[in-house]
Length: 468
Image (cartoon, rainbow, N blue to C red; front, side, top):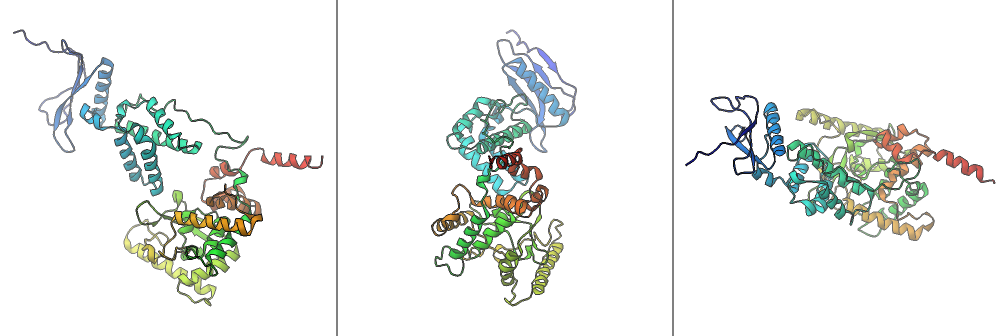
């Protein structure tokens, strides 16, 4: 019987003594066996964390693919990284599995709960139903286009499509890092999103002035909320939010996000200094109880509020929360606030966690000194209930004060735009750098939202033409 010919050796790597081998070994690349078609790459790799090394065989259909496996094995052994995956492992490395890794990586990076939930929603709605079973190693541009084609049926805004493309770009980067996808392959390259039409001199994030509410409309909505939710209100569903009118004013004259409004406490109001400190936010994850977490971007900032708002509306609520009588003096309120801050600071120091201080020391939500609550639960209202009550107030204003009706195209969060433009910049005359400081945003973000090149020149030209 003739002896079996050995496959030809095409390449071999450097001599290594890794693992528990008694003698040195090398990564070797062999040509196909006589009568065969598969190239072979042989090397050693650990079976698992802390386990002995074992012999590994990888097969390839072409010499180019085999040499890529060879180069990757050499590079991985040089830096002690993960060696090339086998066919069985690759079979489990699907887009769906990559999505799970993406969410896990987001948690490990400390992303906000709402951010993670948004990423989960995009994966579940668009990516996984379309290409979830596709192996990551075979992910190509046509698969990404299939995802965008499916998403275009429900995503109509350029921002939503950009977010979905950004999620796939992050998954691609993670696949490269995990070694699931060859770095020479870019499944996003060539995935174009139609450009949104923008005003000349503005960015895609520019907020049209028509979407910035007027001060008269803000006053009408706050008055409507007081009529429906205040002591004179008769609907128990509305009176569950007794300070809804005050909350609207805080949003319109302070520019706080909804989660920041809900996260305000009695100890966050500095009556003697005329401002509130925004140092946390109320987060309500899906299918989980709410909690007070960090402020967005972890940027603590102070926001000045009108004297009438602080002393006529927030001060009585602070007295109630601090256990003081209605007749308590301002100094008594200040003393009680500082005493509570010091108490929490001491508890934080005793806890031994250097990241804790008076403003972020954890307190059971039901025992916290919330300014704005749902009287049934004793904690800040859920966003869904808040929006429902907001629309009921809007309908009341439409009927009872039609001259100052709130446009349906302007959502509640646009009260922040009123604070930035109509109040801080126009009424108080603050420069955009200061406005950014009050909003807790970057200056570039504020400029992109509210500044349009040539706007002043256009206004001057209109004034000149008014008399012609």
